[in-house]
Length: 75
Image (cartoon, rainbow, N blue to C red):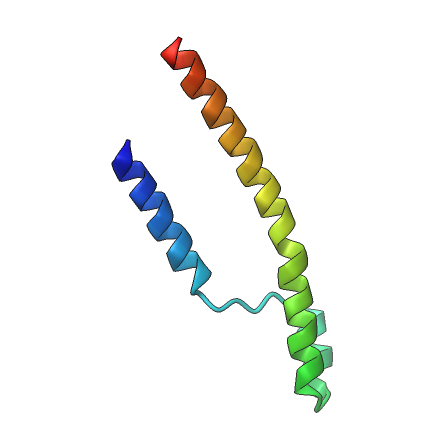
């Protein structure tokens, strides 16, 4: 049981340090044609901010299912 938590923690740490460019191809093309690099960074950060919430919701549902199954197996 303890070993699974370590694996999950290592995966999360690994994913946290991977740089990600979340721009779609069209956004990237428009922003690369412009000389304003700060606008591209701002849009990329906004996309990353909006992308985190679906993953948090999925993680919350997964944890709730895990917790309910764990309680059911203990009883």
